[in-house]
Length: 140
Image (tube, rainbow, N blue to C red; front, side, top):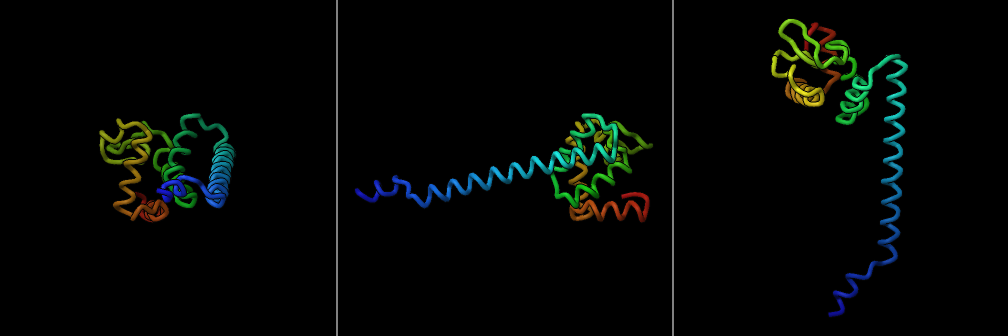
C-alpha cells in the first residue's frame, strides 16, 4: 500500500536531473539554431544571390546528414544540377541527375531523399565518396 505512494512522490534528485536535461536540450537547440544560421550566412557568401527555394533545399539536405557529408553533397548537387530540381541533361533529370523521368517529377525534398537512398546503396551513404567518384570518372 505505501509503495505506491512513494513511487508517485518525485524525489529532489529526479527533479534536478530533469531540469539539467531540459537545460541541455535547450542549449542543444540553441546550438543547432546558431549552426543553421551560420550555414545560411555561409551560403549567402558562397552564392551571393540564392533564391529562398535554393536555401530551403540546402537546409533540408543539411538536416539529413552531418556537416562533412553536407559539404560533399552540396558540391555534388551543385556540379550535377546547380540545385535546380527541374534540371535536365539528356535522359538525366532533377537535382541528382538520375536517369528517370519519374525522378524529375518528384517534389525537390523527395528528390533529395531518393538521391540519398541511391548514394546509400552505391557508396554506403558517403556523399564524399560519390563526389570523389564524380571528379575521377565524370559521373556518379
